[in-house]
Length: 163
Image 1: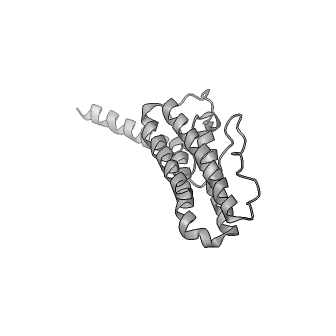
Image 2: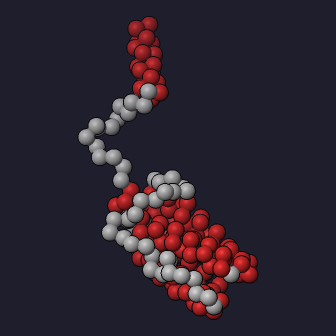
Image 3: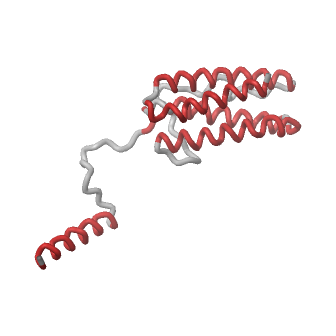
């Protein structure tokens, strides 16, 4: 019995030492490093970042819209965090570009100088974003459907706020 206990303690000590030294006993050195750029959620993350930033630009240009648009910007900031977590990225970025994707259309365009045009611009971006989230939800594995469905529903609600 004494020998088995000693063997068990030796194995536990070896495992502890390996974990403290950063040795990963379960990985194959030939495994490629983690590359999130190919994740199917990367375009949706890029869109969430673009919408969050667009709301920020609009609120800088039209601070009087803070009460109406501030919560929408905050929602997109939460979408960024949730999507980054799901993909396995740091919540605050930086985020790699999605494979074969560009910035969301309209996200880098200058902010219109008229409040009505700004709201119409945001409504279009929200509608496009909702469509993208719905498509991602339908194509995603079931374990991601709740997150993507809630993002799609949130964006639909944003469209109503902007109408």
